[in-house]
Length: 353
Image 1 (cartoon, helix red, strand yellow):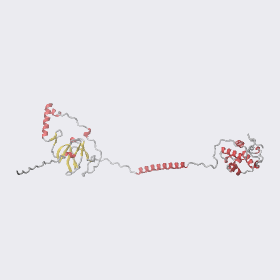
Image 2 (tube, rainbow, N blue to C red; image 1 turned 180 degrees about the vertical axis):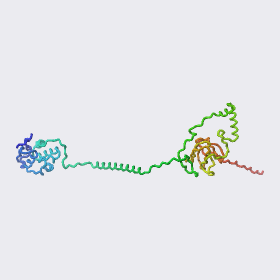
Image 3 (spheres, helix red, strand yellow; image 1 turned 30 degrees about the vertical axis):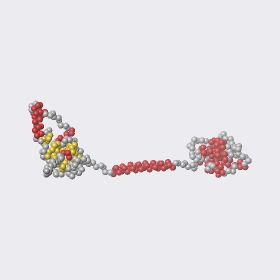
Image 4 (cartoon, rainbow, N blue to C red; image 1 turned 120 degrees about the vertical axis):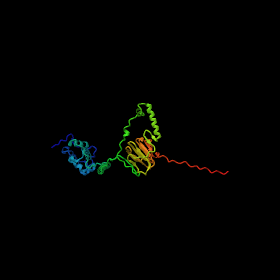
């Protein structure tokens, strides 16, 4: 039964083939006797007494591909463009019209639009550096994760921070041996620093006592000031009498008697007192109540920092000398220098004449 050969009438020899060669002096089988291009190529190969190995060596195509092409097992062949190239090379080796053979192959095996496949046996080579980079990235990520886990485990195992309870007493007092002070809770703001005393017009009380006469009030105030100055008061407004002995009117803080420098600060009203050394070390800090006193140690370079200097009386050697002159006062300046007796001059002996 005749087979449909489409537009290909017959496979003919190429014009430039040497027909004197005995291997090609054969009669080509009629195209209608071949079922497909594979059978036609196989018949032409057998007519020339060529083996599959001979064709494979001549075309540099695998022998398995040549055998699959003759049997038209397209699933064993590479993608369509490679198979068409094999058909062209196979027909060229046999001395057939290569383009006619390709046309016959396209007729026998129409293109179904399948995806291209690489030739069987082709190994895809990849850049080995990509694998190294990927492995390095995994190591870095793993190290970061382990570090975070370790930090959380360490923080979880650590005991909670200890919060010191507030001291029951707000006082901060130096030790008797002038060592570092033990700090307690912060001191409250003194009353004097927040609530100022009401202003009183000078001479108003004297004027009221003298029946409203301003002149009489001035005269009485002048006479009182002169009397107080004669009696030894260093500050008539504060009623501070020089030379008065020290009398405790409250707690006496600081060093023990006999261990101090001889300077005692006593307050008449509530005020704050901070005693620092020349290097900034705090030796005493407290809000003193009215009547409390502080006995200073013999440490040189101590500075008294007070909220109101006018309410602190200064006692040196057990006797009142004055009140603090400023908010910050060096205690060494409060001790008067010792009196030096004038040198005794001796009369020079008379020289004999």
